[in-house]
Structure formats: structure tokens, C-alpha cells
Image 1 (cartoon, rainbow, N blue to C red):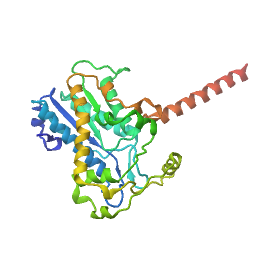
Image 2 (image 1 turned 90 degrees about the horizontal axis):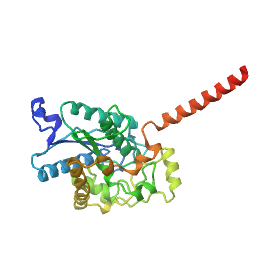
Image 3 (image 1 turned 180 degrees about the horizontal axis):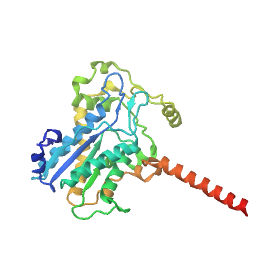
Image 4 (image 1 turned 90 degrees about the vertical axis):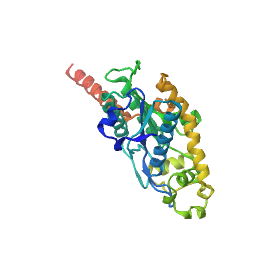
Length: 302
């Protein structure tokens, strides 16, 4: 049975098989999901996915152990903007990287992160942490046998069509609707306001640029979708289907496949999604200004 990291003593942690133990990290933002759902729903979903994947690990790979890390309310972006707790991309990236490096010093090498939010910058930050863990102090990611690996498990759920529809910010077709409410009814039914069945369906803004402008103005709140259509059974199917899709790919990595090829979303290829994109832009502007100033100064002296 998977164990909670914070409940283990140091001797029990050191007794875990270092090459057959996987540490699962649940991460997500805390945000508004409408009047009927808790703000921590995304984090509850991430935790549930970690637990289910760990259970599959121990069932299908005898001798392996799944360890659930503490919940981390670290989300780079959110679907709503009026009420959401988010962090800068490098905060999530560095937390994962430092945690994995700490466990790596104890001899462990297998790490997986499930995110309750699938935004472009969120997944890119997790993938960057994985690349930096493999890279170490080098410039090029290179995985050797026995090398520690952090997998952005949720990246495997992102299709190319989804990236094309909204490459730089989350643009979900529903939020707090039947899908999210179903998951909540399965995981935290006591936290769901039973008035959800009386909520009227809401549609998101029809035009892409209208939605984008509303995000810039931080004028996005509540839910869109149809909460009344939710059910706990549908929530169970969603969670089970997600793990069924992702776990075989995770197992392939633990058995030696290249994680960067399997769990690399197209989001991470786009420079604006990277943690220090704005800093790079500023650095380039400063270099251009310095070059222009140098040229003008030399011409003035001449």
C-alpha cells in the first residue's frame, strides 16, 4: 500500500529500496471553481491521481514502493483570475528540483509529478525541473543508467490539438462544470454544495480574443459548463481513465525508456512558456541598447 512521506521516520525512508521506490508529487493552484466547489479541488485531484498511480505501481510491479509527497499548492496559472493563488514559474520548478535533489542524495532516482491544472506554463515548469535534474551542472540533458528522473506525468494527457487551440494560456472549454463537479463528488463529496444540481448551465465567452482580454483584465471568475450533469460515477471514470492512459507510459520510463521523449508536451517548446522568458527578453534589450551606445560613443570619439 502506498505510504505518505511525512508519516515515515528516517529509518523507514532509508530502508526503502532506492532503485524501486517512486516518489509522487501532487501540485496545483488554488482557485475559484464556482459557488459549489472547494478552491482546493485541483490539488485534491492531483493527490488522487498520485495515489492511484502508486497503487498501480505496487500492483503491477511487485517489490516496488509508491511514496506520496506532501501536497504543494503551487500553480503557475489558473483558469479564473479574480480569486486564485498562483506562484511564479521558477518557484514551482525550483521546489520540485530541490526536493528531487534532496531525495537523490539519499539514493533515490524515480520521481513523478501530477498536476491538477494542465496550463502551458504549469506543465512547462515541471518539465524544466525534470530536464535540470537530468542535466545536473551540464548544458545538455543526458540520461545515463541509474540517472535520477523527474517525470511530468500530466504532460502525457496533452494533445497537439489542445496546444494549437491555446498555446500560451489555459483556455478550458469548461471549468467547475460537469467534469470538475463529478471529480469533486467522487473525491470530496462533503465539500460540494448540494445546490450544484440547481445551478444553470453557463457558456464561456464565444470569442477567443474576448476571453483573452478578460484574462488580462483579471475579469474571469466562477464556473462555466453544466454542474447539474455531474455524478460521482462519472468522476470515478475520469480519474480511472486518466491513470489508465498515463501509467503504461510511466512504467516504460521506470523500465528504462527516455522520459523526455514520452512526457514532453508541445507547450515546453514555445519560449514564452518558459520560466525566465521575460528575463531573457530584458537581457536582449539591454544588450542591444549597450551595443547601440557603444557604437555611437566610438563614432563620437572618431
